[in-house]
Each structure stands twice: as C-alpha cells, then as structure tokens.
Image 1 (cartoon, one colour):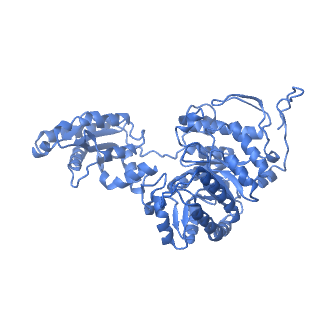
Image 2: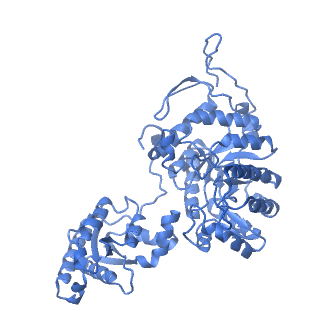
Length: 207
Length: 379
C-alpha cells in the first residue's frame, strides 16, 4: 500500500496562529477520511513564516536556499495540498503569494488542493473565491468545491459541534476523495532533465 | 588549464562614496583590466555583450580588437556573444576579422541574453530564445566552414550563394563555448557539436553547475566526440581577496549588499555558502577553486569575475595582482598535476590548426564581379 502525502501550507504570521490551527484541522479531517478508506497518510506541515527570509531571497536571486528547496519539493511532490492564508486587505497575505510565486506554473497541474483562510471578520470570506481559487485555477490544480473560512466568531462558537467543524469535515471528505481518485505523485519535476533531442531542436519543433 | 577574467561591463555606483563612473571611464577601465590580465600572467579576457544601460559593451569586437593590438599572448573571448539577437552573418564576419587581426588569439562563448525588452529591438522575441540559439548557431557554423552557403531558416532572411568574409584565419574557425546557467538544451547543443560548455557558476548554486556539466559530458560522449571526461568545460567564479580574510569581508560587504542581481537579498555569509562566491584570503580562493573539480571533473578554463558592483579600478587591479602572483600559479600547478594524460587542454588556434593538418587559405568570391561566374563550392 502506498502512503499518500499531504502538504499543509500555512501563511499565518503570529505564533500561535489561527491560520495554522485551521490548517491543522483541515489536515486532520482529510487524514481521518483517507485512513477510514484504508490509506496511509503522511502529513507535511509547512509554516511559511519559518522560511520568510529565504522566500524573499529566492525572489531576488532566482534560486532557493537548501531548506526552502526541500519545502518546495515537498509541496510540489505531495499527492494533495492544503493551503491556508490569513486575509489581509481583502486578499491572501504577501507571504502566501510570494511562496506560490516560487512554484513553477506547471508544478501543481492536476493536483488535489483544499483552500482555507482566516480573517478578522466574516466579510472577508469571499476572498477565498475571488483571490485564492483563481490563482490555483491558473496553476491548473483541482480545487475542492468547499473552501473553509474561519472568522473570530467561528472559533468562539466552539470548534467541536459548530458550523465550522461541519465545514472542515465536508472539505476534508472532498479533498480525501480527490486524492483517492488521483494517481500517486511522481515527485517534483527535475528542471535539468533533457526532454527533447537535438534533432527535434534543430529541425522544426516549434518553441 | 587556462585562467582569466570575464567582465559584465556594468556601470554601477560605488556604494562607499556614491560615485558613478562615466561610460568613458568604465570602457577604459575594462581595457585596462584586460592589459593587466596579460601583465600578471593570466590567459584569457572575456567581455560581456549588452545593448541596454547600465552596461557599456555593445560592441565587443571593437573592444577586443583594441586589446589585441596592445597584447601579445592574451586570448580574447566573450561572455557572452548574443547568438539570439545578433545576425549570425555579422557574428561570422566580425569574429573572423578579429581572428585575423589577433593572429588567432580569439574564441567566443554563445549566450542567449535574458532581458526580454532587448529582443524586439533586434526584431526578435525572447520566447524564441532556444530556437534562435539553435538555428542561428547552426548557420554560423556553416558560414565559417563552407565558402559558399545557400541557406533558408525560420528567423533570418534566406541566403543564396553567400560567402562570409574574411574567411576564418587559416581556414580554422574560432573555438566556440556555449554558456548557460540552467538550460539543458544548451548543454545538449554544445555536446552535439563537440564544442565547449561554459557553466556560468556565479550567482547560482554549485548544484546547477554539477547537473549541467554532468549532462553535457554524458551527451558529448553519446555524440561520439570522446569520453565524457574529455569534454571541454569552462567555469565562472567570483572572488574578492585581501591577504587577511577579515579585511576582504569588511571591504567587500558594502559592494555585496548593494550589488545588482543579488544585493538587498541574502547576507554575504549566506551567499558565499550557497554559491561559488569566495571572499577571503588568496589561500581560501585557492582551496575553494580546487574544490570545483570535485563536482565537475577535470576542466579546461577558469574565468573569475572581479570587477562588478561598483568596485573601483584600483581595487580591481589589486585583485588581478593577487590572482597573478599568488592564486593562479598555485592553481596551474595543482590542476595540472591532477589532470590525467587523456584529458585534453582547451583548444586554441594552434591546436585546431594542427588537428586540421595545417592551414588552408580559402579566399573565394560567391560571384565574380567581372565575369559573373559562380565559383565551385570549395570545401
């Protein structure tokens, strides 16, 4: 039996962070659903805050420091991705966008993705639909229909029986189903692999 | 093994005093660096080619011709010649002319250029970078090797009965390197023709170089030019030296922190760990440079970048003194003692001439002006 891998990316800035809390709950719900179907699951949590300097350096130099390279490989090589950002000024925060700007445009094609966001008010909740979802659509990821937003009242309303818990479980089921239906990831792409012959280069294959 | 310097030709403010050299000063500084390279016993000077500020070297053969007239031994090269946006016909002509004037002390390195807006100024499109490099170089090779060329391609107007003049010196085209940071297609191109491959090896992790050189060596053998370890490899490198390594770090840091390309990003310490940049004593540069061999094998050419980021000319000339007096003599001896007998040195005009069995002066005219008679296509 293969182990299904889930990358869990959180762009929360405070520690502890409600964004990380939501990410963990989405990851647990997805893992429980996969385990229920007899799959083994490996979670790969990624706190972007820990890589903030390397992310900026990569944007400036064009290459990742080794710890960030490993994170990028873990994320692009996972079977499924849970991506959670705080909403700042009506969109994902800069750290979240900067990290995904470093992901090759083809690296998440066909990959099962679940989106989540946190914010100071529920009035930000549609940022999931007008900011996060279009970005992953551009990356040709397969995004679960349910995206989960957690506002302050969701946490104060209790996470066990409240509406947030129900949304998390529904989202986890959707992502688990997408992961189960997809072939295991073949790992991150090798940027140095030669994918063409010189004859093709020389004679008529269009660039 | 050949050692030398390569220069980008940037005009950059000196961050320690806010002074920006004029274009005239920078151009004269570049040629002074070239003359100094010969004086201190280096083998190669290579200039970049750029067509946008803040860079000055838009006309490499003009500069290299000037240097050729004032030097005796120095090999003149480029880093890089833009095979994408230059007309390959003009490259064939310009570098053959330079070859004659420099008595064969010429080779060149092909590169694509990574600045999108430059391409349309020359009627091209950066999205065609690889196809342009492939097609233009294939034509360039023919122009140097065939006296009369009929040609039709995708990017340039067709040629009928065209003869590029002057013909290469002694009928031997200049040796060509192909430079790239991370495009496997370029390593493949170099391997296909049995040309040299030059890994940029500055500003980027050593891992890029290891992978690219590995691919080039493997494909060089695949195409039957020799065994993988006989492929012709060149590397860049970036150094700043003082006798005392702490002095080197202290003096270079403001230039590093404000440098184009990587400034305002990683710290000097991070960048020296992540890339081949070495800031320290001559002995540290020797040790680090000898270590390059561990991940690329025995190689033929080492070029150092010593003059960017606004460093004043005086400082650059001091770097060249240290290279010539303390670093390169040791590297020469060490690398040579490590090189197996079957691994060749970098080709030169003399070695290519010997391999061709002597020179052939192949002056021809596509169509005789007087008789209108077409020539035989002499080979």
